[in-house]
Figure 1 (cartoon, one colour):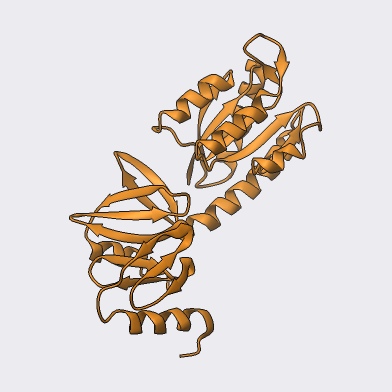
Figure 2 (figure 1 turned 180 degrees about the vertical axis):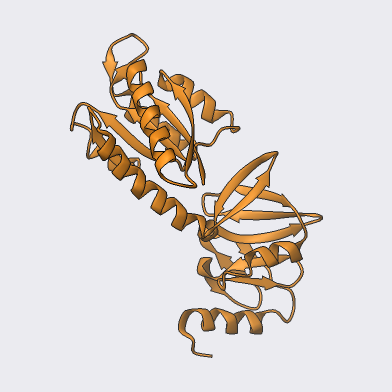
Length: 249
């Protein structure tokens, strides 16, 4: 498995050291490869990710780096907050010399908070946890080609899909939309391993876990979204919904 990895640290020696450990990990773990990009400041990292052509799986970042005026500041933590605001789902490893921001790391869903100097053994352990979780998540993700780039979409985040001509639109929990050039039948086949998805007529596929309420007139979904089922679809959908949750019918 290949993982796009961004390393951000104002010290070149630390960048080199971290990349060396990542390379060593890849050599010792068959099938794991880290494609690394180095960044010496958070502005370059945020710009790179902000243009939407770069979506790293892992960001390894120092917390204390010089700010715009040159003073040492918690730029890494601020950058992490901005990454989350931008919609980045990259796993975050903080490398730092202080425990001061350990609690703040939870607010940005950081995976690791490692104190410098970081040993090969400690980073290897963190990478083991990262790879294990990624492999597990990969089993529940779709890889889609969206606007010329490959996007990983978590199956659980798909609220529903709608056919729009020759394009299928996937509506996600964070109000994002992914448009995929394929037929509804092809998309239905792609989602068929997951029993939570039900096709409704010719135009919709719905994730049963995101249904808040349903009637013959409308289906209310997570986030206030609504779709209107075709005539005659309600009875079958109701049975599938209850079967999924309580096996009662």
